[in-house]
Image (cartoon, rainbow, N blue to C red; front, side, top):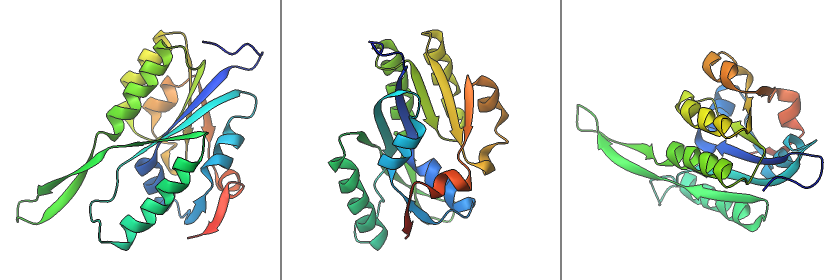
Length: 185
């Protein structure tokens, strides 16, 4: 159902792993307040929900896993954020060394975006990811008459397929991200 106010309804879809890796690659090592990020991105819109997609770290004994669990608990306490978890699948390389592959995250995000468009949960979907795996989902959302805004980090600006497809683009540059900072890790 569309917003009764003049501002369009907005949902924000964040590929958490993609966003984290792009931030690290770009030298953004400070923690972000996702509630504040949502508030800043939602200016001019009627904000519905920020959906954050990721997978738990596969090593439950590691400090990374425990830090991630604390982060997940912070997200779960927010009524404005929905945490959607995928999983990791163990694989072996040619030499028999184990590694893990994140599974279900992209599909969860794409399905939720398309279902949200069909359920009339939003007028505008904001995608925070630099992954062309979302192209077909964007097209499906747009086919329902919804707009898609692509939010990207400067290092992702070269992803022309997303830039061409999105109805609008928003660069998450250093100045913007620092206004959403919780400080160093």
